[in-house]
Amino acid sequence: MYKNFTIKEFSDKTSEKNPVPGGGAVSAIISALTASLGLMVSAYTLNNKKYENVSERTKNIKQELEKSREILFELAEKDSELFLKYQATDKNNNSLLSEVTRENIENSLHIADESLKILKMSYELYTWGNKFLRSDAYISCVYAWSGIKASVCLINENKKSVSEEIYLENINKITEKINSETDFIINKLPEVMLSNG
Image (cartoon, rainbow, N blue to C red; front, side, top):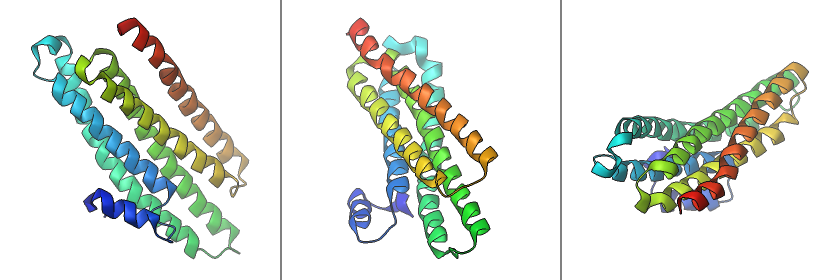
């Protein structure tokens, strides 16, 4: 549904007094657009004699970014579906509420995971991609970061409605790893800018 919207249609839909699309869907769409920006950098790096040494890796990144973009469109729609499912759930049925909340958490985790993949690939493109598009690759890193952090924010909010300790411990370990990998890459960006500038 959302991937067939124009940008204005999605923006208008988001601005309505309606809970969907909400933060999860928006973060997924932002990350999908981030993949598109990475694809542009890939396109200008491929079939360019100056970057023949990274041609194969650029092709792989292009394929992975295309895959991530499609997955994120699906996750955006799923986020809205899951919120509506939660809204319709009997609030006195704790077991069912917990189950639906876990579905929401896992969808946000999937968005964060795809966004992290995009961040890693964008960072690669930033370091050795077409130098005339370094600012685009940099921006791609920044927006991938925002998609990750937004997803982790939603995960932390939804965790409040889950009581299973083992499940929560596992989610905490996963989000800590995601945050650690994300911050490691983002913190390297200024160093790369200075050394390659």
